[in-house]
Length: 141
Image (cartoon, rainbow, N blue to C red; front, top):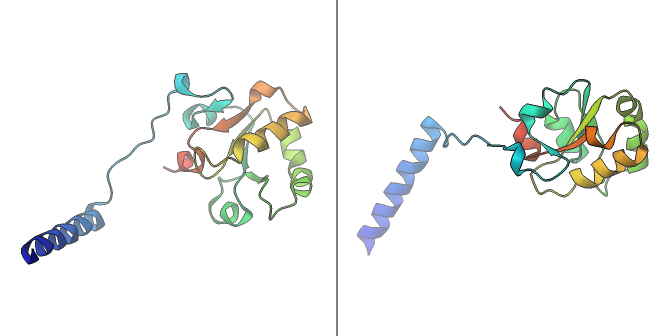
């Protein structure tokens, strides 16, 4: 039994050492537009949109730490005052040709309600307001 524990411990240490030296596996997010829910968009397509305004639906702290460059904060998180944030973002949204909303992960639950509230403003056609497939992680190189 002791031998088994030693072998498992050594194997684990070797795996952690290899990970530390070579990094984790190369996992590239694959986004197929044909597989997306209506209103969602892949990063590759979103990056090509003209006049896009990126909307960060995560917390203020996360937005300040690593929000997409030039993004505006518009979150329904209980720690924030949504109407005030909407007021601050209004000018950017009003001048946008398209809007892409992202939150922390694919299923974080903030992007869709925020996108819907932007649609309710009626500032641009609803088919130009998107949720980013994969969330914030899809923005990472």
